[in-house]
View (cartoon, helix red, strand yellow):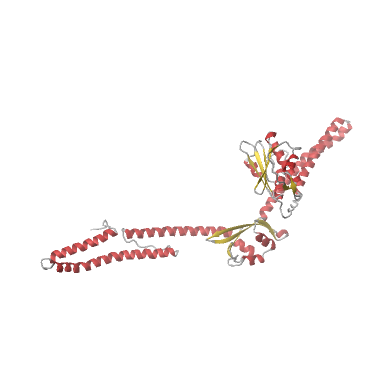
Length: 453
């Protein structure tokens, strides 16, 4: 007969042990009572007979419990030591058996998670090691904690960097790289000269891990990307310039060819029209070339204290717009000519957007240690693609546009140390926001390099 259905708990096993001992004692008392007259002797005899049996039975139970608890304890110690391979043989279905089953389930889950984590670490390490981005991680003492293959190639010709002093590596590195790292800011730098020059972008990041500060340096090669982008920009410049030149030179050539015939016929009225058209196309071409020249050779700002009221009132002669009162009383520190040109361009765009003249507004307010200028309109607004590309050089949605107006505006703002952004307004229209630092800068403004012809 199988007793697999009989699975008492720990409390049940203890109760069975006590019950069995009691029954054995009662049976012995009943058997010995006729032979022994003294109840004390009967009890003593019963105790002497049942005690060894009880001790034997209790020992069996305790040994099983002890083995299971010891095995689980050893297993937990192994888990603490990051060894998840040990499992315990099931001992039953009571509380001890449930404890063993729970431990085995825990160990199995931890093994699965450890394996999954290990696979993720391998994948991450493969990605980090094969990326062209050079990564260097240093601790608070400046010692390299981690460096991928690209970083090894950048600093030590492929040899390991871990454990080395990063400052010593910098001392042996090219001067532009060393200067970029020591600046502590995200920046571009060039290593090498001539055809061997490499343009790289450096990113600094600092973080704390387990209470310890770390610094992460990311070096990204941009030479190929910038070269490809430069080629695309020059192609676009050539297309735009060729288009504008053809639009102006084609009618000029045609009219010039017709001039002798009109002169021979003494058709002075048509000759006057021909000369007027030639003059108009020549002026358009001159304006186009002048716009590109101003963009390519934007001078550095000549900063001076300027009254906002004086600056904005001077714009009313060329543009129709409404000033949002009040204006800041604090004088602005800027190049009045360049900022005036910036605002004229923005107000002209707002007017050409189809907005009513009274809805074209210009507001100035002090904010964040500087001044915020907002040019708003109620025109047709801008699509998502236009918003994305509006500040790119040579991008224009106007049939006769050159695509340098907003780009020139951004260059002027950034030369002043500011920011420019464009967004759509709720209810229709657009808003161009310009932030300019208001405090007088200590160093002289950096001259914007010549961008070429």
